[in-house]
Image 1 (spheres, helix red, strand yellow):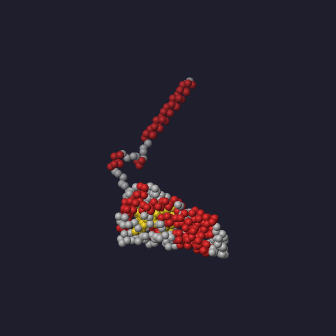
Image 2 (cartoon, one colour):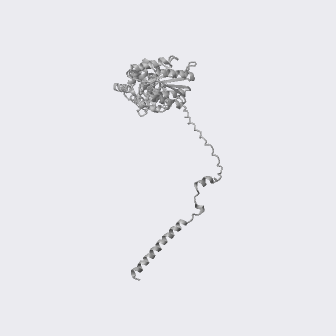
Image 3 (cartoon, rainbow, N blue to C red):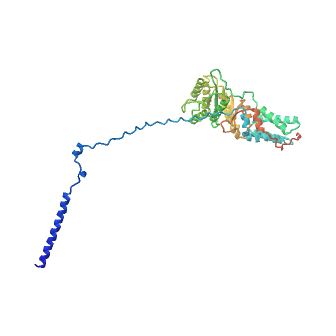
Length: 403
């Protein structure tokens, strides 16, 4: 057999063997049985014989959620205002500016060895610069010149007594200084608080309430300043601190109506005093001043207004006198509350206000603290002005010649 024939036979054998191997593999794969445990069930079989569910363990019932009780809002502690008796004594250090200028300044001048015309002019200038006013200054200087001439000696103790007597006389007025807050049967006393813009009227009104409460009165406050919502909020804050009630109306409401409702509520509540705060106003605005008169007339439908307190800023000096004069004409002011007296050296404004208006200063403000408003006492005030020290002559107690 030739070579090519041999190779042809070999190729045919190899080809047949390969085809046979492929067929064997395919037949094995097609005939391999699937294990019974792994054969999927027909859908019909699964529906007919459902698998029994395993018994479930009864779970303990969850307790119903307990709602946490809302904690009550803490009730603000009610403050007890400081007693008014002796307040001015405790606050005397806050009069240091007026003391240095008006009190010690006068003692220094009067302690000179020789009191000539120039010295007396300096005394006069000092009194005027302290806002005592022209007329009261002239009277004080005249009396001082006469008495120092008669005394013949001027020891520091004598000068202090002399000044004390003259200032006391200048500060005295023929009027009641205590606040009139006496109940009249079932009707409370009514205190109307008025003043110009920027005098600290609403804050002072809150402090006046503390003064009345410190003296044992039950007080209701009326927020008749309806032009500023902040004023009513501020007054309510002051009232909450001392446990008082506030009557207020919507912003822009008629102030006279709020004042009327305040007094009505005060009668129902049986309080001792109703304190009515009014809007600040300029004394040269006729419409606003007429409105203030209306507030007073409406309140008087319940009965008379017992006190009308004018709040004046001591730092405005003589300008405050014109303000005071107009207010007294419109609403019959019965007393002055002089604020910010600790911030000025012009303590003589107390003398000027009283002499010009013949209206007593009833309360003075000597700081920003809630109880820094003190009933005005002439003796305590003069003592605070003059201080406890000797004259600036070095405390010498020797006799000095008179000019």
